[in-house]
Amino acid sequence: MGNKVFLRNFCSSQGSNAFFEGKAEEDDLLYAYSEIRDRAESDHFVKYLMSTDYIDGRYELTPKAFERIDELLNTNIASKQAFVAMWFDKALIGTAYKNGIEPAIQEAGFEPRIILNVEHNNKIDDEIIAEIRRSKFVIADFTCGFSEDKQPIARGGVYYEAGFAQGLGLPVIWTCRSDIINHVHFDTRQYNHIVWDTPDDLKTKLLNRIRATIT
Image: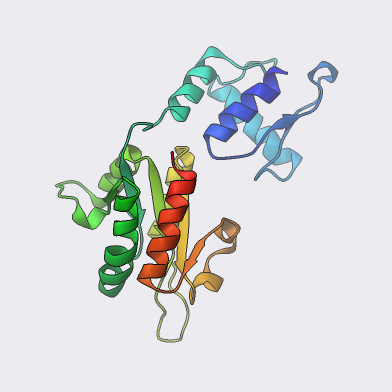
C-alpha cells in the first residue's frame, strides 16, 4: 500500500499520472505506468527512487519523500507570476503577445513575465530558470517560422521551458497558431493546445483557460 500512496503522490506532484500496481506481499516488482513502457524502465525508476532515499528496500515511502512531495505541492502557491515561453519574433511579440497573451494574463489577475522584459546581468538561461521557478504557471506557445525550403523551425527553447516547468510540478498551458499546430512535435502534441488564429482569438481562449484551470 505504501508503494501506491508514494508513487501516486510523488508522480502527481511531478505532473504525471503514474502509479504503482502489484502486490508487495508477493515480492513482485511493482510497475509504474505513464511514460514508462517496459520492465527495464520501471527497474531503472525504482533504482533511482532508492538512490535518492525516497523509498527504502521494502519499497516503502521514506520521510525524505514526504518532505519532497510537500515541497513540490506547495511550490509558488501564492505567486501571481505567469511565465511566457515563446518565439521572440518581433511580429509575433507585437501581435500575439501584446494583444493576446499579455492582456489575457492580466485580466485573469496575474502578472505576465517574458524574459525580454526582465533586466539582468546573468546568463539568459539562468534567468529563464529563475523566472520559471518564481511563477505559478507557464504559458508555452509553439508557433514557429519556416526555413527557405518550407520546413518548420521548432522552437527548442520553448519545449525545454515547458518541460522544466512540468518537472517542477507547475501547470503548463500549451498554445499554437492554427497554421503551425500540425508541426508540433508528437511527444507534446498529445497535450490540449489552445489553437488560435488571431490575437483576439488567443486572448479569449487563453483567458478562459486560465480562469478554468489555474487557482
